[in-house]
Amino acid sequence: MNKNLGWKLALIAVTLLIFLFGIFGIPKSFSGQGLLAAMTDRVHLGLDLKGGTHLILQVQVNDAVNAESDHAVERLKEVLNKQKITYADISKPDPANPDRIVLKGVPPESRSDLRTIVDDNLPEFSLNSGSENSWVLTMKPQALAELKNRSVAQAIETIRSRIDSLGVSEPVIQEHGLGQYQILVQLPGVDDPARVKDIMQSTAMLEIKQVLGGPYSSEADALQQNNGMLPPNSVLLRGRGAGRPGSDDSGEQYYLVTRSSAVAGADLRQGGASVGRDSNTNLPDVGFLLTNQGGRKFAAFTGAHVGDRLAVVLDNRVREVAVIKEQIHDQGRISGGMDEQAAKDLALVLNSGALPAGIKYLEERTVGPSLGADSIRAGIRAAVIGLVAVLIFMLVYYHGAGINADVALILNLIILLGFLGFSGATLTLPGIAGVILTVGMGVDSNVLIFERIREELRAGKTPTSAVEQGFSHAWVTIVDTHVTTVVSAAILFLFGTGPVKGFAVTLTFGLLANLFTAVFVSRAIFDWILSRKQRGEALSIG
Image 1: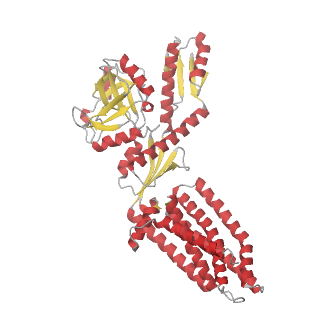
Image 2 (image 1 turned 180 degrees about the horizontal axis):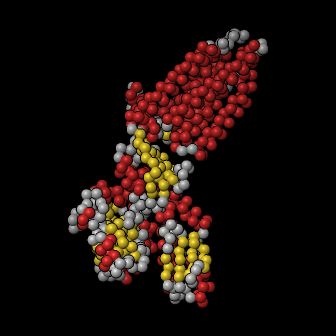
Image 3 (image 1 turned 180 degrees about the vertical axis):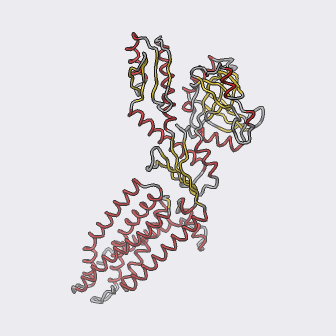
């Protein structure tokens, strides 16, 4: 029995040291405060313990559908004009159904060519005949569902990129399974939630459009100067400063611009935005670079419109209006009305990519650091009281063998906390509950083993034989209980939200650690105790 005892004890000692390093690393000080600081640096606390902001957002997926159908309209016009097929009008008459395009006035002899054009250039749309010599293009259900789901996934990645750039530690950004097209955002330790919300919500939809008219003093003024109706394929947008905090509303301006864009967010080169200084005013501005394709489009547009005005539109608001003096290729600048922080934030959102659609805040909760500290104290108090009670019970009920169980339980907790330190997993309040439940499962395993050993001793077996039989018979039951609990925890992890996942993670790894401590470590300690006893000497197990 003592043949393998040496390497078993060595493995236990090495495991203990490794996971102690996982908890504390190399502390700067071995005082109580120093060890606590080292532990909090490595074991990350969740929102409910550290304080921060909890948000539920909803992606306005119809914005993405609108953008896609607008692109389809422009593509259809381009191909019809290229093939010299006449038409009366192309429009989206129902704002509630942006995936529906109506085409009017196509000659009967061109219907076959129209079907070929749609099949070749707009495969995501189906073509059906409508009333009064019209055709209806409707986005196919599968393509529509894929576009909406892709918009949510892209919004999650864009928000994550922006939050990471702000340096928020251990954020939770994921799809919220309790609502359609919703995103859960948890930001532990955020000290300026208003700024973070502004950066997240900014769609950063940078577009460059041709100016058709303006500036106008009001929407009514714009309609009056255009005979009461806006020209086809145009849109009226507010100008720079209108409606902004601290601005004079009496001085707001409106511009009439083309609905389609010469350059859009997809044409921006990732990471190509940077903060600089306006050479004339020395105020902060933001420069941007376009992709090769975007640069070619911009060069073609500016080359064909020398002398016309263009508008730099950000989030559906005109930020700049300038006259095109010469052909421009792959770069531009946005200036005016920004301080240093606003310029940095704008560059950040442009570099992280534009959100595919707007987002709406459905829920916001703020957890203060003091409330988080109360949760930590309450959770630790519950864990310590529960652990001490269990340790005392095991000593009283199982006498000397209770020390064995206590050592295994303490090592179990060290391994679990060390895992949190190594993996970077976040400890939440439900996670503390998982730790406490792990202690209970550890006690259950020891009780199964010890009671089996007692039965073997009552049957007249020697201590050595009783220990061997006790572990071998209890092993199957222990594995069965742990596997069923791990399966339940896995389901919680797959379908739960952040705190529930934290509970599942701590519980799962705690159970795996418990298999090691309750079976391997406890058996090694029993073997060591028996190796020091005289032959036939009784085993202290109550």
